[in-house]
Image (cartoon, rainbow, N blue to C red; front, side, top):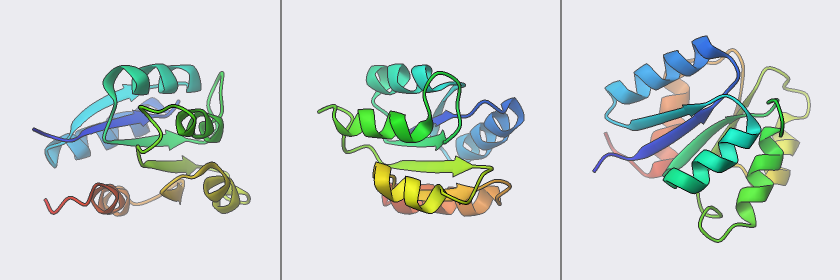
Length: 123
C-alpha cells in the first residue's frame, strides 16, 4: 500500500507541482488550502506524512502541528513545514515539533528526499 502524504498550502501552483512529483514517486497525495482543512483532513485520512505551509488562512501551520501533537491519532505524524518567510522558521518548526522545514523557493527534489527520509522510505 502506498504511503499517504497530505499537502496543505494556499499556493495552487505549488500544491499541483508537489502533488504530481510525489504521485510519480508512488505516494498517494491529498491536498488542502488552509489550516482548518489541514487538521480536518489529517483527522479523516490519517496521513503518513504532512507537508504544511506555515502561513495559512484560518490557522497557521505551526498551530496545526501543535493541535495535532495533542491528538492521540495524529501526534506521531511527521510534518514538514514550508514558508516563504525564513526568519523565524527554524525556531517555529522546532517549537511546534515539526520534522523538518524548507524555505520557499526550494528544490522539489530536496523536499522529496526529506519526505523519503521522514517516512524511512527507500523508493
